[in-house]
Structures are given as structure tokens and as C-alpha cells.
Image (cartoon, rainbow, N blue to C red; front, side, top):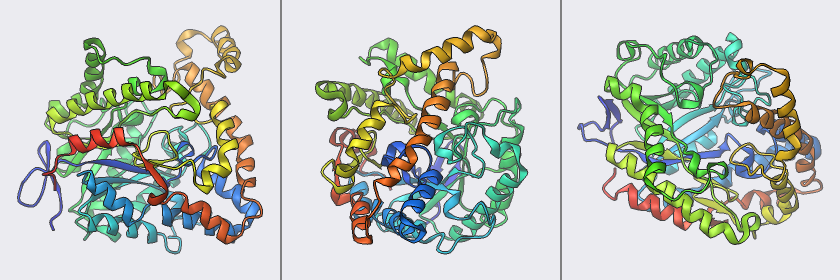
Length: 477
């Protein structure tokens, strides 16, 4: 087994044969996300709240069993059965160090990551380790696990020091593992500096630290502003960071989300999709660099919320999926769709509604859906009128030119108000309620909750998986 490497615009094996990585993101596991597993807010909030309800020992037991059950050999075997060959594993720094004891590895920090990398390797599946959440948060999203909308990672050298330290530990751990395709240094950075100065400085430091330990693995570097903007990256990237680097875009299409309108796949819509994709990779194409699409993919309707419209909505979303894959196929683009597993919104497999976890939390999940507490792909139509007066007030009080706060236009005024007032503020008030659902459970019942996430307890999104299987290619390594 040989290490993969970048050669020009391609990823190749030791013999120089091109390997196109086609797979999915293992999100919501070692970096838990609210829409994926059903809690409100951020991972650190629910961990603290559950410890208050159950005590630290029983709360730790539940989360460990969750990690154990969320991805097993059955998941790896199913993934490979679709002819997919790569899993991007999202990790949260909190699984490796405590904010109160920085740069000291936690006991058994690598236990679950080692296990999943080995399970994937046994099935011939490459893995990419994705640092999805860093101290202070590299952007203002819930998935940074910081609890605020300010990306404080860029404001404190101490936070950057910890991230560099963690990459040194990861590189030391996996430097001899060829089934690890490489390291995705930072998920969706949003450095507000006009010249990307802090992002580029962090990449300089992290790359040097990794290369001092590990010269063989591919480095996957996200563009700024949520992996969409490479405009201020250095012109001499090959000399500065080396040849063995791929540049990561995230190519979500607006047509794959509730706000995107009705997708019919006409020429105008396909052209808009094509232009967005080409614009994101233009900087790399002009320089003959390797491009990797680290995240993309629609979300899907659910019968309990969209009712009789569910099938029609999802058929349109599968059309979006196919049209995006056709674009990628022409370029032989390596990609990692978001998402492998969740509770029913986007995953290739999802926890069955009949499981103990889903039955127990159904009233809470229904209310959470109605209040649109999660930011990701939420249907805001039922609550938009509640927040509109705040938006109108700000528009009236603030000159138009001052409304464009970074990361505008990724976050416009409306989006900013909804993120702060809805997905952070309202979510905070629901965190304790989520934890209270566990009150009185013994370890047997907690394990039953965690086992709801096992592959055997999941349903498959057959329409999505059929499209992925068709495009994966049986000849892929």
C-alpha cells in the first residue's frame, strides 16, 4: 500500500496512477453538530448540560457509547459497497485537549479516531482528517463549537498555538499510515483580515510543523470565507507550501436548500450552478493546482414536516445532486459529499424514527423544527415574521454601506439576525431541556439511546445512494 500524493492537478498513487477520491464527510461524530444528532446549540453546551443532569461519569459514558456506535465495521462495509473510496473525518479539538489544560493530550484521545481509520482501511477506504473546530472558532458557525458568532481564533495567538500543536500530534500519530490520504488543516476559515494575513500565517506555521514530522501526506487547504475565496492566497504557493497540496472548495448549491426555490434543471439554473462552481476553483485552475471539493450536497424533505410534498421535493434535490456530479465528472474532481449519517435531514443513512432515541426525543425535535433553531438548511417561513422587525429596525437605523459586515455576503443582514437571535439565543434556552430528557436513565438505558445510531438501526436514503453509486465508478482504488 502506497501513500497518495499530488502531482500537478491530480492526486496519484506511488506508480503515478490517478486516484479520484469520491466519498462523504463523517460529520456529527467527533465534532457533533446540532442538526445531525438533534441537540440545540453547540457540542460543549450539551456536554456541560448533560453532566449537570447525569453527573460527569454517566454523561461521559453516554458520549463514549455514542462515538462507539455511530461508526462501526458495518458502516465501513456499506460505504465501500457504494464504490466510494474516501471519508473525510471531522474532528473537534475538544476531543484531544481541554481548554482548561491546553496542549496536553487527553487520555485515550486517539482511541475512536484510530478505530475508524482502521475500519476504513480494512475496506480499502482512504480517510482525510479534517480539523473542523479549533479553540475560539475559525468562523462564526455552530460547527466551530465556540457558542458565539465572532471568530476569536484569529484574535488570539494562544488559540493558533494550540491548533499547530494538535496538528503536530496528529502528524506524529499517522505519519506512517498510508490509508490516511491527508490532513485538512482548517474547516471553512473566515479570517476577516482584508489580505487573509492571519489565515496565511496560520497555514505557514501549521504546514512547517507538520512537514517537520510528516513529509508524505497530502495537505488540503480550504479557501477563506467558508472555503470559497482564494483571491489573496500567495502567488508562489508551490514554493511556499510545496507540491503535495490540494486546495479545498466547498460547493454548496443554493438549489439544494429550502431557500433556493424550485429546481427544474433548465439551462439558466444549470448555468448558474456551473458559474458558481467554476468561480470557486478559478484561482487554482489559472495556476495548474489540484482542487478538492471538501463539502457539497443538498438537504432533503421529511414526511413528518413536508408531508405530501416530500417525494417531489426530494426528486428535485436528486436532480441538483446529479447535475453537480456531472460537472465534477467532467473535471475528474475529487469530492466529499456532506453527509454520511444523521437523524434524517441530509445523511446517506439516517437514524430510524422507530429507534429509542428518536421516539424519546420526538416532541423536542418537532418543536425545534417549528422554531427553526438550527441554522443549517432551516425552513424559516413559519417564524420569519418574528425576527423581521429587528431586521427592519437595523435597516432604518444603519446606513446601507455599514450593513456589510464580514463575512458579507455569505452572511447578509437577515442571515446575521437569524443566526444570533434564533440559532444562538433561542438555542441556549433549549439546551437544558434537551439534557433533561436523559434524567433518571441508568447506563443500560443510556447505551440503548446511543445504540440508536448504529448502522443496523438506520435507514438508507436510497435515492441519494443510487446517484452516488452511479458516479463513484467501480474501478476506483
